[in-house]
Length: 397
Image: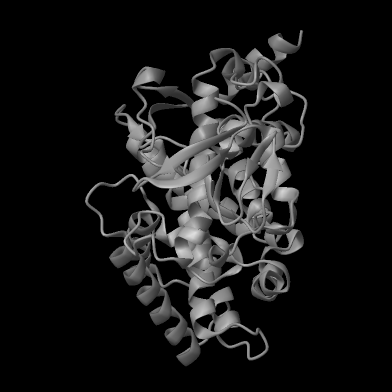
């Protein structure tokens, strides 16, 4: 339909979808286009109901919905936690969690029964990492996960999204109060007790909601989609098995191609025009909402060639937009990449993995925002290391 398309969001809310790589990047680079819903005419005139399914992406006051100096004020207090050096220091703990999860998978796989790799591996890893980073007590983690899934899931029918989001905010507010009473060595404690952060209580809660809620979802889908990409492209899986799996560069290639081929965030709500703007020869008036379709942009044939729909981890590494671009580039990108590389290397080093259903039977998430599958049913077989070494030697010959 074109690089810029007039669409209706859930609830028949009008918006403009940015489809092509060029259109999405143009919006990301345009400082006159805002993240603040107070620039959205439909929002300021009360046309958007407070139980709108996308309310959790629009209503909070945090770095996600701010611009310029206000955005920097809200982002800077948490930026230090995601500095690449600090993230890399988490490698031993991530490796340990991955090992524990794979030990559990080995027990389940021993009887030959299929397992859901998403539910039993891809989900608990980032959830545990983000909860440890923010000091969420272990007994509270399943409840926090359910609240996040409900508040950020637009595809679940009959859900009161406003009530779910309010309950999530209340749970995070309780966490903040607990960290003020008894601080720990975690990011929530550091933010809750930082008198110089400049965050109001409401901004602090909304910031933690964003980081805890959306922070693990991206990595869940990244890991799931990487395994799905390899298993639904047999030549790629065969190629992988002939490579040295402890080569960090291999997993960089797999992760970056996954981010391009099946961007964990397929479409991100929302940005708003503050003045009339022309994008890809389409003029959009001021006060309109824009939906950035990262999944479409990252498969744009004009940018990635005629085989853009094909998963090929040996494709030359090039810039993709899975984590955005510009001032709002995802803070958690380095953490998500690290978790995925460690998880995938360890998984495929220990097991041969095979789908137990046909690729077309994998059910996609019913989500406007997230790209992934509801489940990833697989069969795991422990690798015979001696046999694998002989096969690799023969392959090199």
